[in-house]
Image (cartoon, rainbow over all chains, first blue to last red; front, side):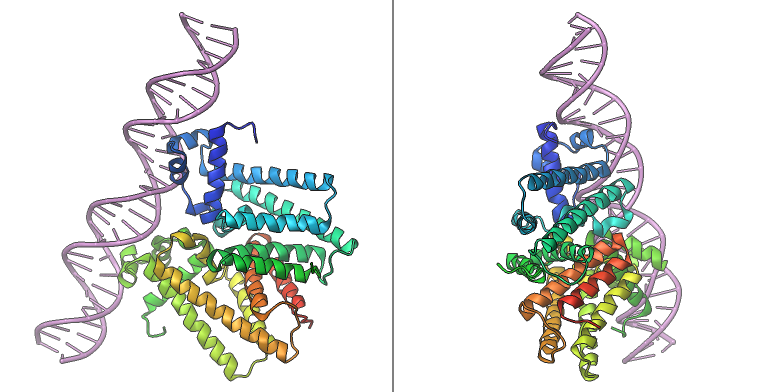
Amino acid sequence: MTDLNPTNQQILRYARLFLQCGGYNGFSYKNISQQLGIKNASIHHYYPKKEDLVAALLEERRNYLAMSIAQMVESKKSAREQLQYYFDYALQEFDEGKCICPPGSVIIDFQELPEKVKNQDILLLDDILEWLANVLQNGLEQGEFKFLDTVESHSEMIVETLMGARLLSSIKGRKTLVRSIFSIKLGLGWRD
Amino acid sequence: MTDLNPTNQQILRYARLFLQCGGYNGFSYKNISQQLGIKNASIHHYYPKKEDLVAALLEERRNYLAMSIAQMVESKKSAREQLQYYFDYALQEFDEGKCICPPGSVIIDFQELPEKVKNQDILLLDDILEWLANVLQNGLEQGEFKFLDTVESHSEMIVETLMGARLLSSIKGRKTLVRSIFSIKLGLGWRD
DNA sequence: TTAAATACCTACCTACATATAGGTAGACAA
DNA sequence: TTGTCTACCTATATGTAGGTAGGTATTTAA
């Protein structure tokens, strides 16, 4: 990841920003090239096709997630701490103007998307769901959380709520997102 | 609404389908004209600009919602019955291939959208949230529901969860949506 | 019965998106 | 010094999207 040259890194960075703001069909190479003061063709040099760019970007997020999880495991974070990290991440991205998470950003265009992108997206989503299910399971066992449905069901619901909350909050404002995170916590029997 | 001519009705019908499948930037006049066997220019006859089409479509949804609410009130539906109606509507739309609700379908493109569309979308969202808050309030008072956060907060969360659930379900399948609806019910203290 | 309105068409335009071909300038290596 | 690689560039092909101008045929209403 960090072995990419600076231009390439910037391309990925802004591709992600624009993707998370407008979805797959909502951004173009021009958005990125203008931002960076380079030409469209230069982006094609690194990513011949748009699908290559977006697939790379999703894969990078998957690696980042794996790294974050490894760090949290190493520093022996509690379930609540791990989940709080996820919430903080969502809030931080909101503050950066990213109106939806990377895996969610392509779903509205999913049907017509190249297989390459679809596959990376499914992998990323499954990684998130698997991590979250683990956190909830640990939280249950340690008495940090309490809820009635299954671990799988509840982790799906949390991802969905956060996804929807980020969309709605991009219209209704930050407070809506904060409220939703609070409601999710209530649903976990988590009161500070 | 029903005083529209058949072609116009069909245009709105398919515009809605495509909008709910691919978002504002994800569908074109061509999608609709091909489907109906007419020309692009014919759609421009009814809706000079894309924003007119989408705004009209959102307004139509708002009228439909108002009508549905009026019917439910008239037939004295309980809070659970009313909420179940909402869930059934989401499931039905899922089965029709619509991967997200009308108000949600434009949010990813929201920033660059014409004011006209934005305004209609906000009106529709607020109508839904207001209705839902009413239903939750009544449900609380009648002992049909039980939850810890505020009525406003919880109704927002339900809309968000359903929005996210429909997105995720468009990848992971119908069972995911059914599970999420079940989880929402659990969160309302609603067990059949 | 005629005039106006409606519904739809052909033909076109502008803008832009993705993508390719082919070229240049500098780094680096043999 | 020659060759090859990287990192860009210009120019252009191709497709598509949104939108307009103006025509025609059919319906409607005076």
